[in-house]
Amino acid sequence: MALARNRREGGLNYWPGFVDALSTLVLGIIFLLTIFVVVQFFLSQEVSGKDTALAQLNAVVARLRDDLALETSSKVSLEDEIARMRASLAGAESERDKLKTAADAAAAGAGGAAEAQARASSLSAALDSEKALSARARAQVELLNQQIDALRRQLTALQQALDVSEKKDQASQEKLADLGQRLNVALAQRVQELSRYRSDFFGRLRAILGDRPDVRIVGDRFVFQSEVFFDAGQAVLKPEGRAEIDKLAGLLADLEKTIPTDIAWVLRVDGHTDVRPIASPQFPSNWALSSARAISVVQYLIQKGISPQHLVAAGFGEFQPLDTDKTEDAYRKNRRIELKLTER
Image 1 (tube, rainbow, N blue to C red):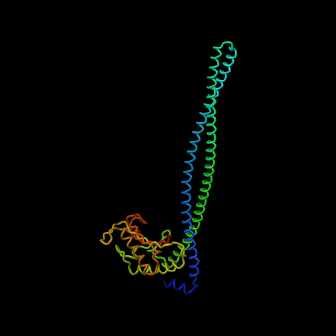
Image 2 (cartoon, rainbow, N blue to C red):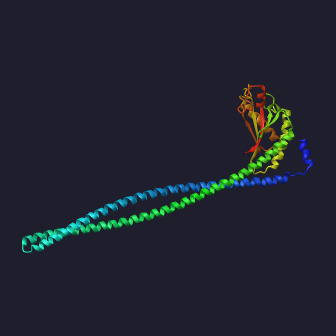
Image 3 (spheres, rainbow, N blue to C red):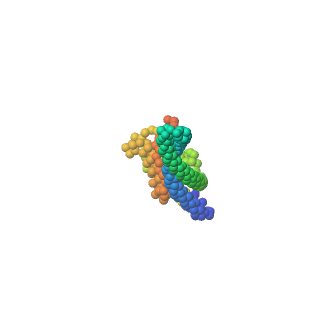
């Protein structure tokens, strides 16, 4: 603490301006995250509604296609019937002409003429009936043609509606992808900023702690041997442990003023034990002991004025060892308190 205070007294105090700039960055990322969540919600609703509409339109198109196929089949059947009627009509007309010729040739025989005339009348009646049936069939064919044309127009309109809906859906997907990409870029920038603060924090902490054998740096974490803070099997901070945390608390207080509020960061305090089970009525397991030790460190930092929003206590028991050997040196390495500055 004396070293840090001397440095602040001996130089310019640039932290307030730095804090303002970082606060602006934090507010910006919160704003971006809010916009992304809102836009993603509305785009998801729009895409879901369009999928339902597309499914309904596809069902209508399928029904119209079935109706069109049925009407087309009926039209073919009626055209075949008309063809048969026309053939029958042609045969009847031919027979009538023959009978008329026979009647004219046998005009001298009254009986033969009467019979031919009667047969001709019968054929004429049949011919008239066939013509009436043919006219009705043609009318039905014309009606079917009109219905088929109407169905085809409906199919065309539905297909156009489907095309428009698919284009809108594609546009929505592209907007969502673009927004997600921009958000990822913004988040990556915030992670890079937090990494810079992490490097500065660990650099200053390393300078404060000095070169100590019971404090190591493992990756992005500071590792303290548990004996620095606690007696064996206990979770109550020792006086010398409080002195070390006092150094850390002063550094964290400066860090809280420096990091912008739109960067979600925490100092995670992890408690670890060795693999040997604890025999204590106070702690039923190594997990309970490691958690209690991490909580003790966090609670002491809160007493020193560090915001609880920037602190996390975690207990890992014996399940994350640094050294898996069954030796006293390995046990000592595994009994530790780790500090890690990370995003929330």
